[in-house]
Each structure stands twice: as C-alpha cells, then as structure tokens.
Image (cartoon, rainbow, N blue to C red; front, side):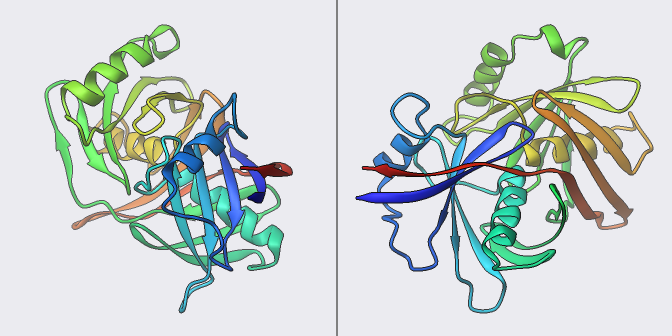
Length: 257
C-alpha cells in the first residue's frame, strides 16, 4: 500500500495528515497508524489525523494517538487540520467541522488558526492540582520552575498512578511575567510533547478558576512556541473558548506500507 500524506505542526505538536474523503485509509489498522507515527520506522508524529467528509459540515476530524488508538480531541491537531483543509480548498478562511467531542468553529489567517473549543462547565479543585476536560482530560499542577522539572517521570507517575489505565494528560505550570509556561505529558504518546492544545486551554481555565489570574485572554508558552487562549466567564462555566496560534505544513510525502 502506498499512502500519500502531509506533515503539519502547531507549536511543535506534529501530525501525519491524510485526506481520507474517499475512505480508502484502513482506519482499524492500529499497527499501521502506530508505524506511520514512529519517528524511526515511519513518518514520525505525535498523532495521525484523517480529514473526512461530513454530511452537514465542512469536514470531519478523526484523530489517533501515536500508539495507534483513536483518541479524544486534540486542539493543536484541530488547528492543523483546519490549515490542511484550507490548503486542499475544502474551506476558505473559516471552517465548521465535527470532531469526537462535537462541533468546532475556526478561522485561519495566514499561518494563524483560531479554534473554538468546547464549553467547560466543571473544574475539580484539589489540594495540589485541578482537573478538567477540554475535549480531553487534563490534570493541571503548578510547580516552582517548570523549566527544570522532570516532566516525563512525574507525568508518567500521575498519569498511571492517579488516573489508572484510562489515564489523563498531565500539565505542569509556572507563572511568568507574560502569562504561563507549560509542559505536558500526553497519554497515548506516553511522553512529553512540545505542545498540547487541549492542555494549554485547560491550564488557562484552571488558573482563572483557582483565582491565580483574572485575565480572560491568557498567553501561554509551550516548549514548541506561543499560544493564546481567550474565553468568557458565565454562570454555567466557561464559554467562547478559543485556542489561537500557528499551524504550518512541513512537507508532503508518500510512504509504502
């Protein structure tokens, strides 16, 4: 089998993109997806995303973690898919699409994509961390100096020890003079990634909920670049949540599997 693919990245969070509007990709082949995401034996990526037709909206997003399993929402992946759809001519400048967590609106201006995330009604506040779902589950924990923090070891410990087999993404956060710096251990990748869109969204909302900030537009520095999260606060929780940042095509290729 020869597969045509595109490689995209959003602040270092990278994805294999495949135009699957003809439904030719073997979606249930987890070993193939895992191989394509492998950085030594495949293309190399944090995840694989299929762009498919949708009966009512511009397109459908189908997202797989690097381990080959279909997963929950990926914010940076969604932004990259909007850029991909714009490149293919499926949309022009704006999009409305379906994902595993529901409908998303987005706009694209040059390399910058702004993606509307799902509303968040519930944030659990614990003694040393917060937990919420922004399309994917996220543990958010403040640390004194995230730059020198052992994200892999501590993230793995929390991901399995606190949340069991299903797991959670784990975000470690340090406040800086502009906003926050974040590093994330992602389940499914089972390692730190350079950026996590649902993760930085969770951090922004958690920091507001905890009273650490009153801002409703929050800049966040991830390992792979800068993102911005904006939202409104209402009685029902957080709404009009937008994740904004760059999404760029890296290359196109063909791989024989």
